[in-house]
Length: 230
Length: 405
Ligand SMILES: Nc1ncnc2c1ncn2[C@@H]1O[C@H](COP(=O)(O)OP(=O)(O)OP(=O)(O)O)[C@@H](O)[C@H]1O
Ligand SMILES: [Mg+2]
Image 1 (tube, rainbow over the protein chains, first blue to last red):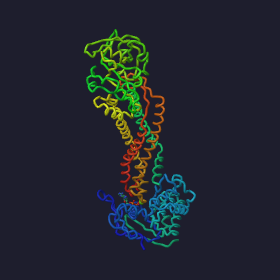
Image 2 (cartoon, rainbow over the protein chains, first blue to last red):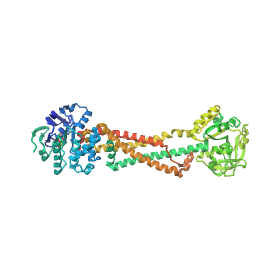
Image 3 (cartoon, rainbow over the protein chains, first blue to last red):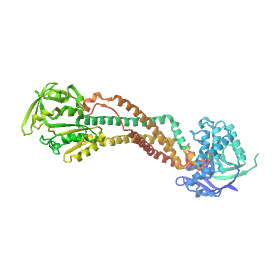
Image 4 (tube, rainbow over the protein chains, first blue to last red):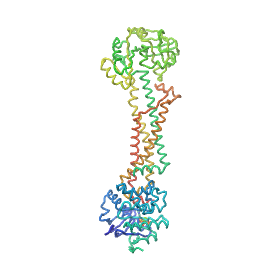
C-alpha cells in the first residue's frame, strides 16, 4: 500500500514576476518501509519536492495524498497537526532548539502532541540509545558535534511516531565519518522500526546506501531506480 | 516546556537581555522612587497642614468664612465645645477668636490674622508650640504675650521680647489698638503661613476687641485618627446643622486636591515611563525574532501551532520585563526604606520648598498596593510590546524561513 501518492505535481515560484518552474509535472508514489534517495543537481527541485510532500509548501497544481488524506484539502490548522502526527522532519541544519538538551529536544515534540510523561521519557531514552547518544542525553546542541546534532534530529523525527521521515540533505554539513554513522543509524531504524525514510543528497556515497534512487533534473524525475539492499 | 524554553531563551543573548532588564529596572526605580518622594513630601505637607495649621475639623458661624467679620461669633456658652469633645474619635477641641488685624513694629506694619487662644487647649489641638525656635508659647504670667512666626519677625524687624502693636476693628466698629510683647517665635515649613498668623491669649484679644469673655469664632477639633474625619464630620454636621463645619481637605482646597489627584499623577508618570520602555522591548523582541527565523521556521515545520509560537514569544517578553520589574521594585523598596528612615534632604532648595509650604526633607513612601498595580502594568506593557514581534514571527512561512541563510 502506498504511503505517499503524488499526482501531476507542478510548482511555479514568483508566478507574477519572473516565474520559476521548480517542478514540472511529477508523479511518484512511496510504499511503507522504503529507504529512498532523491538526487539531482543544484536547483533541480529536490527541496521543493520534499517541502510539498511534507506539507510545508503548496503545489501550483497536482496533489499529494498521504494515507488517503489529500494535503491540499486540510486547513492551515489541520495541516500543522497533520505534520506533527504523521511526518518526521530532518533538515540540513537548525534542527534543534539550542536552549534544550538532547533529551528535552526529543521530548519536546511528543509534548506538542500531548503524550503522557511516562511514554515520553521512555521513548526519548530508547531513541537516543538507538542513535548512539545514550550518554549525551543532557547535553545542549552547542556541546554536540554536527553529526551528533543530526542524530538527535533523527531521534526527534522518529519520536512523534510518524508515517515517514523527510530529510533534506541531512548530511550536507557533515564529514564523511559522521555521514556514515548517520546513514547507518537511519538504515538500522528503517529496518528495525520499519520507518520510511526519504532523503535528498548530493553525496554519491549517501546515494549508494539507498534502496531506491530518484534522479531529478530541471523539475522533472528523469530516472527512478529500485534495487535490493547490498 | 514552552515556559522553560521562553525563560532559557532570555539568556541566549545575555548582554542584550541584561541591558533590557537594567533599563526596566532603572525605569521602574526612577518612577517608583520619585513617586515615593512626591508621596512622602505630600504626606508631610498634609501632616503639617493638619497638625500645625488646620486641625482635622473646624466649626464656624455660617457667615464667618465668607466675611471674616468680628460679629459672626459662635453661639455663646461652652456647650458646643464639650458636646463635640464627648464624641467618639475626638481628641481635643480648642476655641479661638479669629480677627483680621494690623501688626506694627517701630519700623513697619503688615496685615495679619490674630488668633486668640487658650494655650492649654491650643497645645492639645496643634503642635505649633513644638515648633518654637525662641521663647515660649504664650508664657503664663507674662503680660499680653504674642507668638509670631520667624518670617513675620524678620519682616517687622523685631526680636524676642520686642513690642508690637496690634490694631483692629472692635465689636462696636471702632478702630482700636493694643500693645503686645513677643514671647515666642515659631518656624514651620510654610513661610506664607508663618508670615500671616499670630497667636495671643483669647482673654487679651477679646478684651481689646470688646468681645464678651469666652466668645469665639472658631472651634478647632483634633481627632484621634485622620481616618475618622468623615465619620466625625457627619456626626457633627448632624448635631449642628446651622453651623459651618468643614474638614481640613475643604478648609485648604489645595491639600484636598493633593490627596485626591496624587494617585493619578503617580500612575500617569509610571505609564509614561512604561511607554518609553515598551519601545525598547519591542525593538529587542523584533531582533530576537529576526535572529531566530530559521529556528522558528523549524518549529512551525515540525508542528508547533501559531498559538504556541505566539505564546512562546509573549512569555519571553513577559519574563524579560518582569525580571526587570522585580529588580526595580526591590531596588526601590531598599532605597526608599533607607531614606524613609534617614530622610532625603534638599538643603539647597529649602527656601523654594518652604515658600510653597513644603519641607525640604522627604520621607519617600509608596503604598504597597502601588507595587501590585505596577506589576500588573509592567505585565500589560510586556504583553502589548510582544504582540508586534510575535505577529512578525507568525507571518513566517516555514518553507521560506528554512531556506534563508
Ligand atoms: N522561494 C522561492 N522563490 C523563487 N524561486 C525559488 C524559491 N525557492 C526555490 N526556488 C527556485 O526553484 C528551483 C528549485 O529549487 P530547489 O531549492 O528545490 O532545488 P534543490 O534541488 O533543492 O537545489 P539544492 O541542491 O541547491 O538544494 C531553483 O531554481 C530555485 O532557484
Ligand atoms: Mg535543496
